[in-house]
Length: 561
Image 1 (cartoon, one colour):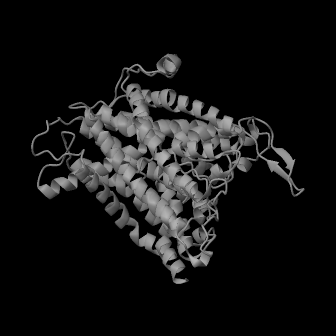
Image 2 (image 1 turned 180 degrees about the horizontal axis):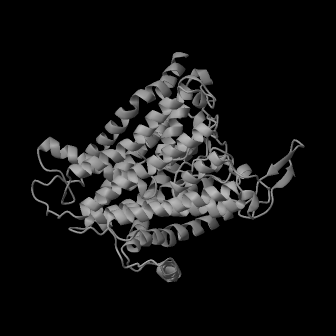
Image 3 (image 1 turned 90 degrees about the vertical axis):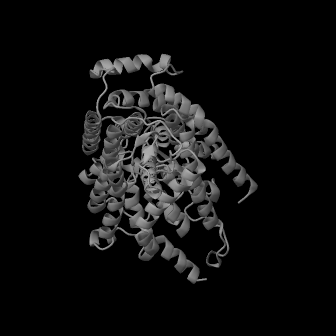
């Protein structure tokens, strides 16, 4: 690593830490109904939205009604995105005259963008029209991210309120997340990206002559608007097939830095919002610190693996699959951030990472996407691990487990286990199925341990709602489109429903004042316990599969020396 690389990494984390309380405090004002800077600008639009949809913004619901509204809203989005794909040839804004999308790919894509996964088994610029990209995918980028934030807000209310069954209003939380958080940040970010050279137009594709004298078709389209929300909303689906390694999607080192920062910005800030809403900023910083430690550990291991000398590669840096404009450090920082934050965008091919760096990206996802994670989703996933940690700590000292004055009882632990196990079961079962059936093996680009890594990563990405891929697997087949699609559904709602059940249960409980025997959850001891539980649960669950995949590949690589 060069001095410039070190400075950039330090600047990246310094800005992330510095912006967390600023944005976090703003979101606290938004979700608690206090006055904030965007209220005069978008307040009228919020009122019109409620009027047109018939929503009573003062009405609060229990967890079952909240969850039902959430599920119905997402179902409508899924059906809408599916339909516009299979009839896109008849819709406007299709200058390239792209044909209709196959039913299985349309199903996979509609599930993918509805669940905030944004997995794509196709090249966007040669498959989807401008209309589908904007009205379908970009809109889902907003509302799927807002759905994750809404679930988090409901859980926070369940933790902070007492003796009630009311968790707020899903439609209000969804609207405020979109209008006051995601929309203004995306507009600002899109303008900055356009200034850096990201395209935003409705032109037909242009044919140019290359320096070699051949002709090449250059895709055009409204890219900047989708890229802004794909990063800020931890969505990840690229406008172009090459994603953020494409020069029209990520033109400069400055745009690259900003896009990386945008991945973690809202998830990090929500920890501060959480601290404010539960009445203890220290609790928010405790969670932030645990997330940051796990991220730094993963980044350090990846950088070491990528910069390690190996005579097989002539003691040269591993530049295969990386964009030469950005280099190794930027590629590894992006791969670590995007897999930790449920984003899924890439500026380098993860298939070409060293086995250990590829494993770090995979493990980030397998841990449950809780190292900052998706907007909202990462924090409510971390709170699930906190409940489990508090329960185990209570057993160790012989006390009734409590978190923020509320007893953690059998129901909360059962729901937490369901939320943790659901994605992990999908990863292991579907990976095992794909690795022994013809339909699964026929799509592999590599055999052996690396081929297993490609399959593992695909289903981890689906169940973790990440969306990135090893890029060595042809996933645009009936088998993979359907299995990955169902994996994304279970990975999303197999966690959301238990989380909402926990929120409803916690809201009904009384708050016990702290005493001398209270187990504190805002100190370094708790941070250590939390990290240990995360690594033990995630590591032991997937260690056998990882041993046959990236670990075996790393050992075989070193045996050849």
